[in-house]
Image 1 (tube, rainbow, N blue to C red):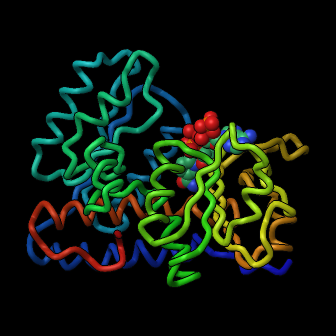
Image 2 (image 1 turned 90 degrees about the vertical axis):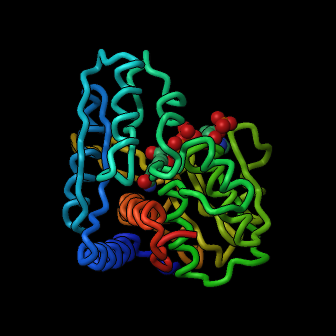
Length: 296
Ligand code: NDP
C-alpha cells in the first residue's frame, strides 16, 4: 500500500478541541453556544446519530437541546417547534434530522429554519450564498472533506477535481467548495458516460455515491488524493456487518497518493464540523469575530 492514509478521526479530534477552546473563551463572556436537534419518529440510525451528537455537544461545552417528536407529528406541529427554536436566544444551531417520515416535507422544514441557525447549511439561502461565493453556513460533510484536503494538499488551485455524486447534501456543495478553491471541477453522476475515464483525470477525487467499492483502483490517477464519503454497511460473511466506502480501498491505496479510510475518514469530520458550524453561528449571531480555520 503506497498511499498516505488521511486520518479523519485524529483531525476531527483536533477540530473538536479547537471548538472546545473557543467555547471556553465564550463562557467567560457569559455566552454558551447551543445546538438543537429535532428528531421526528423512531428511525434507529437517526436515534444513534442524535445520541452521538448530544454527547459530542456536551463534550465541547455547548448546550444541547433535543426535540423528539412522534412519527405522526403533523407539518404544522413540526413547523411550530422549528419556529420556537428560531426564537430561542439560547439556540444558535438547529438541525432537523433526516430522513423525516414520508408525510413530512423535508424542504419545507429545512427552509423554515432561521438561515443564521442553519448549521447543516441546507437552507435555500445558504445554498445560494455558497453558490455565489458569499459567506454561508456550509454543509458539514463537504466542509469536513475540504478541511482534510487543504490540510493534506495546501493550495488546491488549478487541480482537476472530480466529484462523483450530485446530491444536495454532499456532491453539489462539495463541487461548489472545490470551485471556490480554484479547482477545475467535474461533477459525475449515474448518467455519466465512461465514469472510469472521468475519474482517471482527477487529482482530487471525491466519491459520494452510496455504492460499496464502486470506484476501482484502476480508475484512480497515480498520486491522486481520494476522499471517500461513502458509508455502506455490507455483510462481512461471518454473520456480522462492516462499514465500507464507495472506493475499493485496498486497490485504490496502491495507486493513490493519499486516501481517507472508511470508517475513520470523512465520517468523524462531519460531526466535528457540525460543532464548528454551531460555534460559527453563535459568533455571527453575537457579532463576535469568527474562529479561524473552522469555516470557509
Ligand atoms: P444520494 O443517494 O443522495 O446521492 C448519490 C449520488 O450518487 C447521486 O447523485 C447519484 O446520481 C450518484 N450515483 C448513484 N449511482 C451511481 C453510479 N453507478 N455511477 C455514478 N454515480 C452514481 O447520496 P448522498 O449524497 O446523501 O450520500 C452519498 C454517500 O455518502 C452515501 O454512502 C452516504 O451514506 C454517505 N454519506 C456520508 C456522510 C459522512 O458523514 N461521511 C454524510 C452524508 C452521506 P444521480 O443523481 O444521477 O442519481
